[in-house]
Image (cartoon, rainbow, N blue to C red; front, side, top):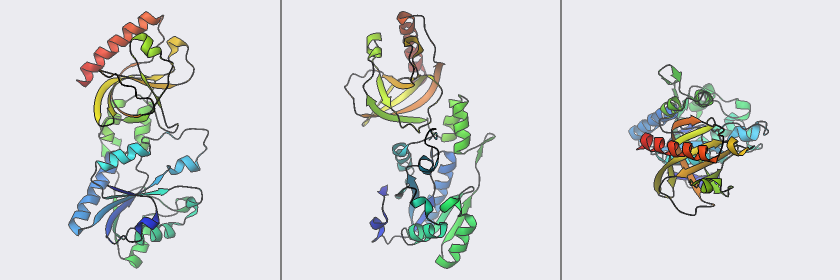
Length: 308
């Protein structure tokens, strides 16, 4: 997958494309269905597949910054997930207040038609674009007459009574339903971050943890202990993740820390990607360190049974 971030990179681009546009937050099963249709259409018509998205997420710029917006995937996670779909081109538009003033027609002409040579455009049922979300499916249909491209709408996807969209998945995360979240995503929910210095309490307890610095707009699941898969560089491990304020130590701020099984490397400043397999228990305040150590040992045993 080729990643482009500027119109100037498309000056000598001559391939015709089948493309789609959107934030694709979470790259869930609904998104995957759309991308499969895109791939099939491109294959039939000998086109390249392209996806136009934005970084940062538009809501990070447009919404009140005092409250996190709750992203299902940060930019790095989104790229990781999209790479698995076989997409040819990911065009990432740097989103800003200035760009937000771009009209729907100008966006379509400058980026989709002149930039990416769209021959086919596929969008989701709720797609809107341009300044104040003024552009719609009808806008794309109107312009298709002038610029001679095909347009297709992908209807809403439902799975076992649930609408498969980002809003539904955020709600399920808040409801502590990780099993259903993973089902609608089509993969185990991801969180990732850079390893930072912690207070070393895990090491004292005999379970050294890596503390992760998270994107403040990333939606974390409810506080508690999780069985997780851990990706570090090109290797995969298993572990136990704790999200919460560590009430046994009278913690105040929320932290994210993972104990990685069979791992003993210095990884400060490096990135980890965690896949949340199953929640083991909610966070709890223990009467003392020994009780906490005993519970962590039980958590580790259970996590290994879940994952292995």
